[in-house]
Amino acid sequence: MRWTPGGVSSDIEDRRGSSGGGGFGFGGMHIGIGGAVILLVLSLLFHKNFFALLGGGGDTATTQQSRGPVQETPEEHRSVQFVSFVLDDAQKTWEETLPGYRHAKLDLFRDAIQSACGSAQSASGPFYCPEDERVYIDLGFYDELRQKFGAPGDFAQAYVIAHEIGHHVQKLQGIEQQVHQAMENGSRAEQSALSVRLELQADCYAGVWGHSTQQRGIVDNADVEEGLNAAAAIGDDRLQRMAGRTVSPERFTHGSSKQRVEWFKRGLQGGRVEDCDTFR
Ligand SMILES: [Zn+2]
Image (tube, rainbow, N blue to C red; front, side):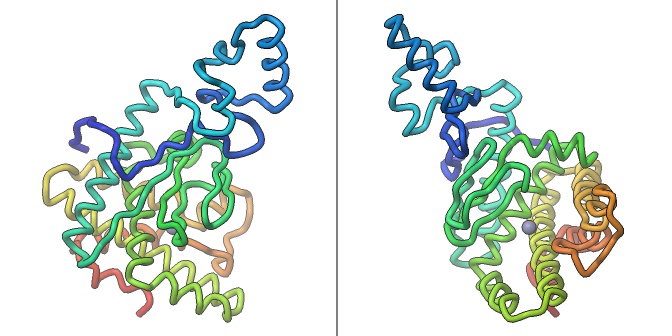
């Protein structure tokens, strides 16, 4: 992808330094409450701030409540810049495509996070919460995408963000609410089918943004392959096989690899929202 690292998007909230789960996060290092107590005792005994040794530095007494300084590797910083670029570019595209589009926010976190949709662990992957209109991502997911799922490349990473923004578009269109209402009264099989349609539409919307990037020469054919590879890599049938289970479509939530590639492609080819009606 052709992009230049710039500043951090104003739609991004960096919550990587805040404590999301059980331990306190000090600049990316996580110590338990026990560890914090020991450091506190040492600090009191020696009149020296032992918390500073962890890299958090500064006023650590308030660090526990508020957000701590975020320590990141140069690679992580570049990742944040990349996510910023994709987020801003995708939302600008949707501003031009969808009348009355309002921006989603994106929260960066580590390990665990509290959202209006409940608490979540990094292991469950990036997600969009319609209640607070925020996308949540632990950048560690990108390592997983590359290593565990075998989907490298920056456009693969971009597709993940664009898919979540696709869910935000569904929220703004009222589709998300309709589907969740229908799911409440449905059987398990119906719920699964509805979930798949919702997810495939988000894939198609990711493609709509992808189309725009192609038009502007940001993305070339090799990039598109990375994106399609990523869509295939996280298909439900592949995930079920990876988990050592037999493939059972009635348990699908996101659609098969083939379906995900198909709908992503559909958005990519035409760049039209109308092509993304997975409910027809
Ligand atoms: Zn999704």
